[in-house]
Image 1 (cartoon, rainbow, N blue to C red):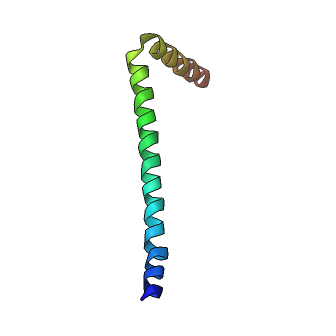
Image 2: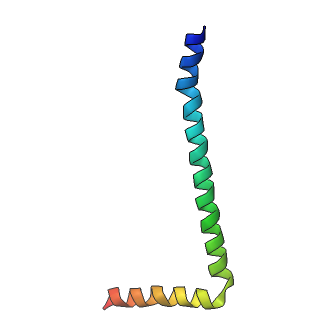
Length: 63
């Protein structure tokens, strides 16, 4: 019986830990993106600088 339990733990429980870690990492990345997007949206100066950078890049590609 112990042999089956060891097989079950090695097969399924270790992969569940890795899946949980991946979900946490994606959640942290998503939270970071939301915070950055909120900062850009609420700050007029930063918003203008980012828009200016994109406009400059677009004009370089257009010419």
